[in-house]
Structures are given as structure tokens and as C-alpha cells.
Length: 80
Image (tube, rainbow, N blue to C red; front, side):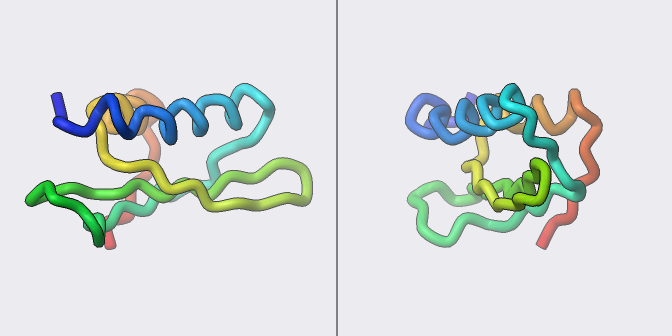
């Protein structure tokens, strides 16, 4: 388990709420190293979400939950 799982779970929960509200992930999911962190190898997952004619980018810090979600959903990942 990542040390920041509890602190960062709110962004992951926000992603799940958008999906429940009908937003869809427009693949790929972009992953890049986190710029500002104390962790040595932390990454941030960037999800492009679309609903009707709206589009948004939601950034979710690395956690075991988001990694499991991406794997379980078989989302294509592009590492930057």
C-alpha cells in the first residue's frame, strides 16, 4: 500500500463519482512522474473525461486503488 493512499483517495473518489454521473474515460490514460512530491517514485494519472459536448482533465495521484482500477478496466496507458 502506498503511503499517500488515504490522503489522495479523494481524487480517486471524484473520478468514480464522475463515471457514475455518466462521464466516460477517453483513452489513453496519461501517466507521468509527479512534479511535487516527497515520494521517490510517485506518478500522477491523467484521465480525459467526456460527457455530451463537455470535456475535462482529471488528475489522480498514484495509489493502489487507481492502479487496480486502470488494470481492471483494461485502460490503455501512455507513460509520459
